[in-house]
Image 1 (tube, rainbow, N blue to C red):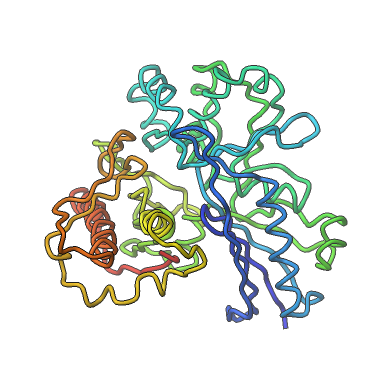
Image 2 (image 1 turned 135 degrees about the vertical axis):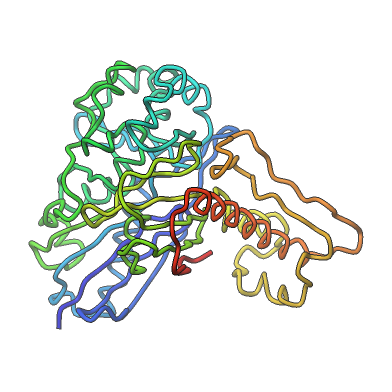
Length: 402
């Protein structure tokens, strides 16, 4: 019997599981990942915490299956973020992740400089929290640290480096940086030159279905994994599409976690003239994948739970118990889930969340249901964009922990 491990570097939780060669889940573990906000609009995480948590999860999985039969390890992870390394490949600072909003001026600089060429080149709008504006922010506000940068990567590529000793990336993650040429399938030299960025700091791009390498002897010793097992990886959205069976045009999924993502498989080359969609690279070659996104799906509920719950250990199942008894429409209470700005269809980091219609008769569960409904309405706005572009949707699969 062959076994395989999977690690997902999420924004809220790092998850790990073991499956057999029939795809049956044999064991799974997870660990919450704290968000660090040292200043307003800043959202960072510790790569070292990612790594220690990954090792902890792998060692827990070792208690459930025979590790001598593990044949491979797959990675998925949050997109857009920035990890910076020095000459010794040590991390120079905390990672700036996709939720970060400090780089609004850099986003405006990118839009002013590149204008329509950005979307034409990358197939994507740019937003705060993307790797390119975050890197420009570092260049301006932390110039001494920027000078020390020898290499950069997306979050999940950091884990691949720690596992294999090889730092590279692949098209599903690279396309989410605002510095990648969708048509040439490589870093855009035009974009890098426009902002005088050092080309050498950007990692080599390998095909998505090519392994990063094999685990190092050090990792094998720490985890008891067999030496020589390969490590593969792709972005969380590409892996979500593959894992939920989105392989044919017309298939779609809604993935709910910290954010909410609406994915649709269609032919390659679709461009939204209003720039409301993300164009993604599917893990499968020559397959188009398009994403509409709402930023604060599960995060909205987590924010409210942390705000009002006096017992942090209370899980979401107990926190939301009884919400089905609240009438549809939450007795006239509405919630806008724009706690961190919004992507589809507005792409406006300055939008803010709100409760409307709040009265003295509303109880805690009314607010909980209003949050859930507000997220659902945001996802409906995503669907409206796909319908407008006449992208066929024959089937929708729900996934995620939201």
